[in-house]
Length: 208
Image 1 (cartoon, rainbow, N blue to C red):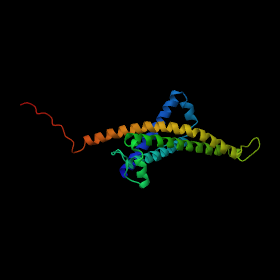
Image 2: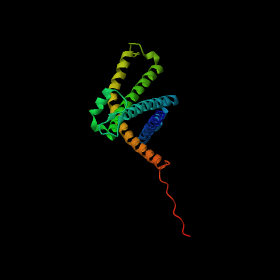
Image 3: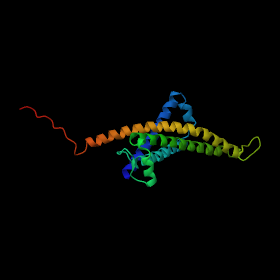
Image 4: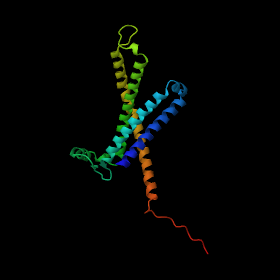
């Protein structure tokens, strides 16, 4: 259990840092990194990274739990943990056992991660708008902004952006699932090569 928690923590951190680095590279290549950093305070930057790390950690843990609940060594996808409903559901998806099941979880929880992070962005934007101009809310005159209009505006933006966020997050989750499988396979090979039971090469004797 502790090993899986450490693995989830490591993979979630790897996903969050990789996404931030990719975003920085894209913004820098577009020439807007300086203006973007000028409009971003240190506290807000830490808050957004913490939100991204939290959603990545949560979704990575859920995906790892779903993968660990299915015995991938059997073609039928036998559930190791769970009730009869999970066993019945696993018997109906024999085609997803193995790597396909892992990639499917990457797609699903990557999309969920995108939606959750978008929700965090919308929440931070709403709080920042309310904190920066508290006198603008609650009024119905020309100088005031009705709170209900702002709420529906953010809800509409979240509804449209949620679809895009799910698609982008699903694609990123698929890529991370592939990368994670490769890294874990390399780590398993390294551990197996360094185990005490592995053969140790004997240097040849020099001729006398």
